[in-house]
Amino acid sequence: MNKQFNIQNLIRENVKGLNPYSSARDEYVSDGSEMVFLDANENPYENGVNRYPDPQQRGLKSVLAEQKDISADNILLGNGSDEVLDLIFRTFCEPKIDNIISLPPTYGMYKVLSGINTVENREVLLTENFQPDVEAILNTVDEHSKLLFLCSPNNPTGNIFREDIMVNLLNKFNGLVVIDEAYIDFAESESWVSRLSEFPNLVVTQTLSKAYGMAGIRLGICMASKEIIAALNKIKPPYNVNELTQQKALERVLDVQSVKSEVSSILNEREQLLKVLREVSFVEKIYASDANFVLAKVDDANKRYSQVLAEGVVVRNRTTQPLCENTLRFTVGTPTENKKLIEVLNKLT
Ligand SMILES: Cc1ncc(COP(=O)(O)O)c(C=O)c1O
Image (cartoon, rainbow, N blue to C red):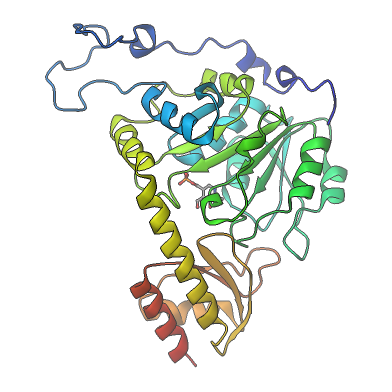
């Protein structure tokens, strides 16, 4: 990477000059002593949620910071990682001027967000092994390429990207490299969070929606240098993570044992599912997975999708994605759900 990497050169001009909205809860931070709060035009009658939530989610961040061995200043939380990804676009990409690089087949929101933010999405296909094509990526980049999205483990293919390839891209791409680790807790590889201090252009996103089993509360995590987090904080809506979410998330991240044991059951089930899928007559190829889903190539994805649906099982048809012709994506369910899936698959002709 360019030795003179300076994050200030990547931030949009209008964001650089912004003064974020200062909310009542930002201006007065309680030290725990009994105070009378007449500053935020709230209804004073207590019901558990009559007060605005902490805009900086200090309680939750301090636990996450300890668990991930970083500082709370390296963390920004959002209403799901989808909000975090949108904040990254809006902080760094100048509409109609800048561009981003995404690597299909991959998570669809990078493309959607580029459309919403009027930022060109330059697509560089993964190789046949579903790895980033470094040369093609570097040939596509220009001085307006602000973000490179690396989804690892990748959705929908399920695989982790090779470490040497990622390091190469982190070193050679002059914008921000956003590693989307939504599925990292199912993988054997370590998170890239441990390497934040090595790469000033690294941004890691995670979520409580997958391994943590909290998709309904919407809690996304962004981890990066203090400078990147400070820039994102400038445009973050003041109360983007609500009180109920903060409470539930805190309970869940503290319950390390339950999360571990659910992940381990899901991984066991994934192995069972892989085994039996190999015996299904119309399954032609099964891709190795580092996530909580399995991508499989079948004889005719549209036909098999409809047949499975008619039997009451909803899977994801990925046949329209590049390199994914005739593939279906199966999320790993409970043992009972997986049994049902296998029964359905085995009786289809
Ligand atoms: C790769 C990837 N990133 C992010 C998300 C969105 O996560 P969240 O629920 O935190 O918005 C998903 C959801 O499917 C995903 O597959």
